[in-house]
Structures are given as C-alpha cells and as structure tokens.
Amino acid sequence: MESSMHSIPQADFINLKNLVLAEYKINYHINDCFSINKLEDVSSKHQLLFQKFESRVQQSNLLFMVDSIFPIILSDLALDVLLGKVTSFSEYIYAKRSPIEIGILANEEYLKYKFFQFVHSLLYSDVSSKKVCDGTLKTNKVFCIKNESGEIDFYTFYEQQVLQLLLLDKLKLEIDLKSSTVSKFNVKINLLIHL
Image 1 (tube, helix red, strand yellow):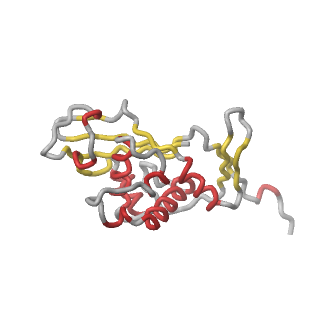
Image 2 (cartoon, one colour):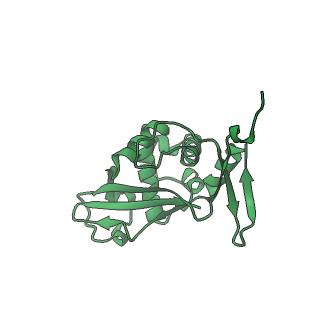
C-alpha cells in the first residue's frame, strides 16, 4: 500500500504576534449607590455588577469549554484590567484580593488551572467565537511568536503546555475604550485578549 504526502494532515503555522485571540463585550449594571457618566468614573469593582456577555453564544461557549462560573471570573478580570490592576492572566491569578473577595477567586491553583484551560481553548477551539462551539479541538495548528524583525522567538509542535504557560504571562489584556460604553444604568466593557 502506497502512502502519499497528500494523506498526511498539514499543520497550519500561526504567528501569535499582534493576533487578537478573543474579544468579549461584557455588560454590567451600575450599582444603585453610584453615579457613573464615563469609564473614568469607575474607581472600584463594587460600582459595577456583572449582568451578562453581550453575546449569549460566547458566554455559553465559556460555560461549556471552561467552567460554569468562568464568565463571572472573566467579568471580574475585565474590571481589574479597566482599573489598571492587571495586564495579564498571571497578574490576575496572583493578585492580592480584598477580604470581601472570597471564595474561588482566592484559590490561586484553581484560577491557574482554569486560565490554563481557557488559553488552551482559545488556541485550539472556537471558544471565543460568536458561533456555537461544539467542543472540537483543532490540534493541527502550530503556533509561533516572531519578534519585531520577523525572526521566530518561539514555536512549538508538541509542547502545547509550554506554550499555554508562556501565554499566561505574555497575553495582553486590554480594554478597548473606543467601543466600551456608559449609559444611565449600564456599562459595557470590551475586553481584548492578544499578544
């Protein structure tokens, strides 16, 4: 039996540099005790109460692929990014929290595992898509990170875990202020995840 090169699945090489892996629009209700007219008025997480993701499909994908409370965790992370407290998943995982923030957010190992799982889903599934994610992992992708001169700084064929750990530190979390909005009772924050 002859085998041909055409029967071997080919890998997709993807440069992660400047690639937006996810964009989540998260809706919050303004706590009745506060008045917020612009994003700069937000000075504490307690001013905003998480409501939902603008895309129900994205929120459902997170429930299905990561954890039932992961949308709540991601909404908390988005507030920390807005307040300038964190810029990466690792900073969020190891951040000092106030005594009011108890429960699962205080468990560093749990958060590390869940963000590790989330990064895996970002890379190999459609978890951030606005289409329903069926849970299929596309593992024929090969990721690389190129420097400013276009030379490869990092690539991996089989070391998915090494890449995921690297991305916990390297992925940038940012609020897109231009597309984030404030209305009378609600705030919409647009969270970007990119390298």
